[in-house]
Image (cartoon, rainbow, N blue to C red; front, side, top):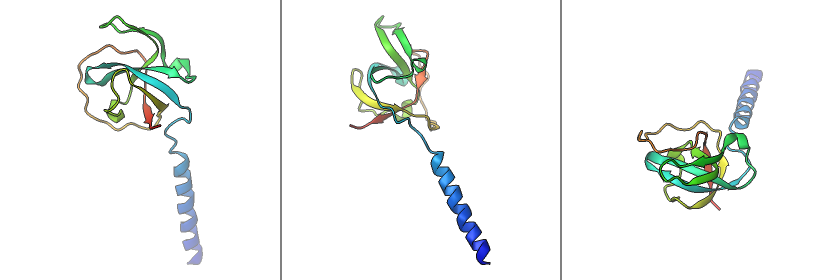
Length: 126
């Protein structure tokens, strides 16, 4: 009886410990970004203005078809439902890339041009 009890305790500890290792949600790298274009239906374009980001994850040069304005080092916001409302077009903020599974949410389907690459990010309060 005692060995069964000990087995259950050890199993629970191992399961808990393995679950903790799988919860890595964001990279430890921080970047500074700016919300460049706040298109309708949360079609947001963000530029990386500080930090060395993997260039395969962003678009080096992009032109907004509507405004004809050109941007460097940009990406489309991939997780609009977790982006803070307080950040407005032109605002700068710090963020990490978020690799966690994103929650589903309703976003309208209207089109506004965005870069071809998107990233899920987590805004960091500083």
